[in-house]
Amino acid sequence: MAMYVSIENLAAMQRFANQLATHLFPGFVLCLSGDLGAGKTTFTQFLGRAIGIQDTINSPTFTLMKSYDEGRLELVHIDAYRLEHIGGDAALEEAIHTAEVAVIEWYEYMLENLPETYLSIHLHHEGGERRRLSIEGGGRYAAIAEALSA
Image (cartoon, rainbow, N blue to C red):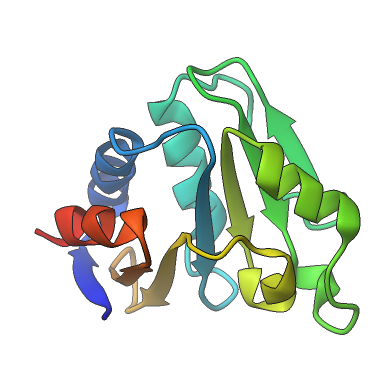
């Protein structure tokens, strides 16, 4: 069952990322979806900052994956957009399963490589800086989805 959160501006998105960061644990898998420009990479940047990553986090569209390990948790950022017509990738699957925190943009293009449960956030762009987030999670992620939408 999806939970919903309204985000009015970038400051609110940063607060939401900070809130999510308090729920992260080693092995956490976060799947992001939304149209181009919906804010997936911006959200990942805010989440990275919340766990202490100082490096510039940008979209790994052409490299598919970037790792950041100077925060309190290692973050592996994957952009699966280029896998749309290819399917999964064994190296990416291994990275997802071994990362402390994996954030996957365009995860719908590699569903067969994902673990059984994960937290998914769909970003709906509503104009300007406004976003509506649809949050879902199975297993232990269900309680996190509920806490984030409270």
